Length: 291
Image 1 (cartoon, one colour):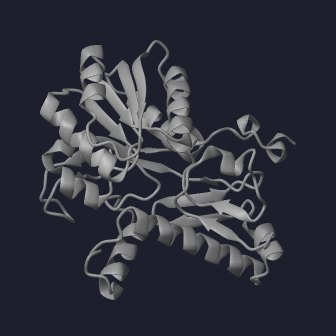
Image 2 (cartoon, one colour):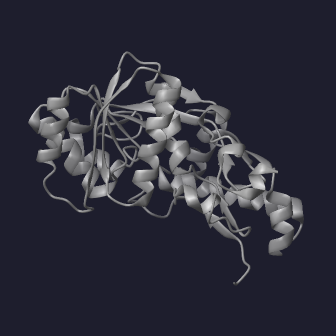
Image 3 (tube, one colour):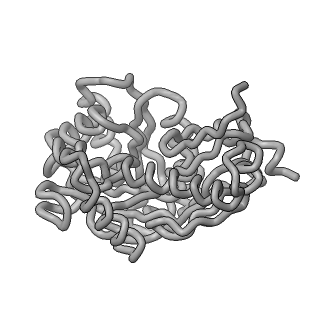
């Protein structure tokens, strides 16, 4: 209606670049399917063969869980899904679900929980004796890591921005942040700060190329554009306005580390290539991608 550019740096719902596509919307973060595919790409190369899914009950986690199952089947045929559960957002007791996971003998607990629900899950999984590995989208959030403490150790995460990825571009970004930061509660540009920075700088590149701030000019310039971000090259796919980028995968290690005193993500264990994490254009439910 308003015909202005909408820059998305954090909302993952697959439908936003598919059946609900809007030409003014650009997603400079991962979709639910990308996030799950990147983690599956890494986990498929480990020794683990059984997994269990536990997520909050709304659309994005369900989309992500579906994508994770498909990706695991594709990357590691023969792997086994031990079970799948969804709980209300804000649940205070996840013990019944965790006990089912333990009983299933699953080696991986895959969750898309965030915030307080992720903290509850991490703490209760440790308290109840879950011995497997937890794979999570949002565990590189320092607020979660500090609150969860040692309960988070060994968890695996993947994200489009990773503070600990020491590319030259990221090192320079962190130093600029430290010199200019006006918010002491955010000493480092972790997770959402880094994602927002990359997204806004990508849009700035599109505006620069267009030499205009008119939405139609920016759309034309941004489609297919590649920008060198702190994590590496990011390309805006023209057909659905979904960013394609290399995805770092990392593990929660004991503190103190390079950035925080509490457990936090270490340096990347792997970088998943953009094309491996991407949903192929022809599989996106968007008519523009099928031409």
